[in-house]
Image (cartoon, rainbow over all chains, first blue to last red; front, side, top):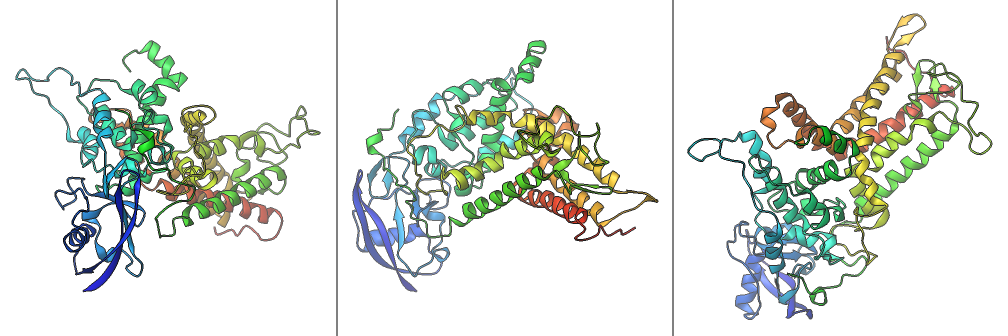
Length: 248
Length: 262
């Protein structure tokens, strides 16, 4: 058992400051345990969003020592404890209170993406047939728990605040899951280019690095979507081929 | 719908709470790319010591016009404006592999960080407030990457032919250390090229029902396998191609001899 110092962001809206708390850390604790302990011992009014404590609900996103992480999946023994451990709210979204941010923008973005539009059923009973190897790619993206750590670390949202013109990595892979689905017939390439701002992604792969579900966001999701946009809008040979073979 | 900008936190240049050595990868990338660009530019402009007998430096391959026995169409063209820009066979071909690497998705992400601090590191503040991304000129040009990829695939075959030539000695077949170095380079450049995101897309990524194209599925799977190590192959092949040139150059200069093994 050892006593560890934490610096936790306290405040409402943009106004606030880091406050120091000390608490005893025991074996097996995660950062969220420590935050709960501090809440119980010395900061009963501290706001923190959490739910499952198992890395599946995506609620307890925060920046621990400057890196976007799920507090419930960050074990204390992985952090250097010789200096205070800093915990602050994610920065790509407006702060509400303490560690809680307003992520409702994300839910509005999701509504703008064209919905799943399956081809006509394959069988008379109204069902479809798919091969597992066709569905493997969208399934990787379905692991997303919507913790929005990828949105937080993306510099287009975090530093440039381009929420109006860029939907962020979370919704690019949501779009990829729909676009690559073997049953889907919708085309979202124009939206990706014009409304969702895929051209704003400059492939720094920070989103992939922070994903707690280890989704290969950039290589398997965003870049393949960029290539689909190139197919439709930037590849003259492909355009020419489509004149002769419109359904390709 | 909209996020009120005044409710968001402004992050200053280099502002971060990170305590790890986040600056090390961009610094190493900057140093590595700068070394490669400086050396390649110098080597490409030399127009000397780029071949030694049956060995040809990959920076000069294919040699379209030049003074070596490897030149396909004979000596350097008379129309070349030598007074303005001295001729070198590398100048005719180097734009293709250079363009392939410059527009490569991996390199782009790495040099935006290392050379343009956009961002300097993940969760590290940027120096600029404005941002255009790859949506407008000039970076919208990055979308031609697949055309450079087509050229890069052709270069794999051309470099493979150089391995074959390197095994032709005056007294018949042979294998030298140079042959092995050229072959290693082709394997690594091939691993980099065939793991390219554009190649992977065209091979099968474009298909939503890839199970109906079994050959393309196999090619896609192989490309995906290489793609998982794309960064590694990008770096290693960059150094092997440079080393091939250094090896050939030092052989040509007589500093060392191309050791014949067989």
